[in-house]
Image (cartoon, rainbow, N blue to C red; front, side, top):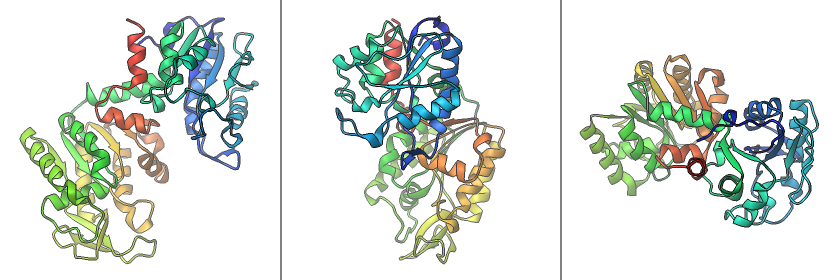
Length: 389
């Protein structure tokens, strides 16, 4: 892919697709991490003397209809403050309010536009007509083949990858294509079914695969251990058995806890008990890994040279069941390994345990991050590669 810094941008109208889909409450931004992550790209374009047009989606409004609660006006106001200059909001069809080098404007929510989600060529051409150069910088939506991510790249005079997109791809490249061994992947979550493709793909790539949460319960059941009334997927026990057999054949390790923390209810005042994995009783539910498992996992993390983290090992949002994920977070924070973490629950845990600056790379990608873990090629990446050929 051609990168943004390879293209002369002076006096060029540059359209940058960012991900400003941030949480809002009462018209106010409550968490601006995604906007902040895009600021270096925007500042680089300004410094290059470009006339900058930004675009993004926000929420899930009904396509083709304006809905004030999903307007990007609060984003425009926030950007104005961060950049120290006006960032006017405009509608598609209006003349973009950028006249001089360094000017910045923001296109209103692309999901208000008819044809965005089904990648309409008509809309894609309208967006492409706004610019001389299109920059795809939003990794978080790179898995969506939409007019503002894929179609516009096809019709723009020039299309390239932005620095933020490049960073995400380079971080995952360091894990999958050129990692230092041993490679450790931690995959948590409630269901094997939602992470099955991830687990299958990672087994070929990593040396040790740690499974946590409800996923671990399904694997424990596959080993013949009792899981009581824990969340697990009985219909996927045969699949878990196959993955364990495949790991053995490949000489890989699927890590499971030896002891667990159980309770009958998920509550901050729950009465908890530590149980060996062989002794979980009917009525008991597994909500975290136990102290022996924490010690064992700490050693696994210490020896890793590359770490990929996607999902907690317990219900960390609930105080009695946070110890496992907290210990894991602290071990990764103190590790010298190259670490990449992504996924909503993982980022929430990293924030809760305040280790944001101790992870080598934090991915804000969500669905795109998961699809990369599944080994898929992202449509917005594919089109950037194709338009250069």
